[in-house]
Length: 238
Image (cartoon, rainbow, N blue to C red):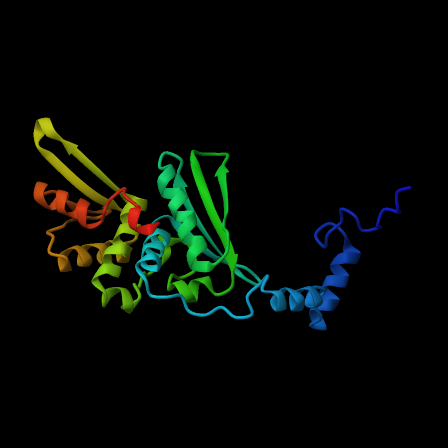
């Protein structure tokens, strides 16, 4: 014999006034319905008790570049979320990116196909993502990007950060009949274009600046940058 169906089954504070009133009362009294569960979850390691700073590694630098290129950090009431959206046409990139997110945050991200377009979304929820990653919350187009100093002070990490950006937003094209080479990073964020241009100059390249792109056009430099960034190759991230 089946038990009685709870009176509040299928109801939430969004669609039922009594639950909304209960929720507001508990919030005013600073009482959490999940306190007991959260205490046990922290004791068993299901959720971290603290969220320490991320290690300053090439993987972290790569994830910062990837987030600035095709990612978004959103702040919620109790936590933050990181979402990276990558094209389905680059399966190796989104698969390795999901692994990098898991390795850095020690948590399996949610990976799903976006129904409205040919893209894969990699998403994770955790506290203080923005502060620990050094990437501000909000839409990239409206942000002033300040790359963390530890990346500027470490050449391999600087290259890894550039790789994350280029894997997300760059295109490499070669037209042999006209002897045309173009390795272009495109973006509408001026501060991000400034970072890419300055980084390339510091690495010895001669970038061409456009209002929405930074381009390398010399054949030898295009091939050299392709090797420096190991463009479309992810062996060292595994």
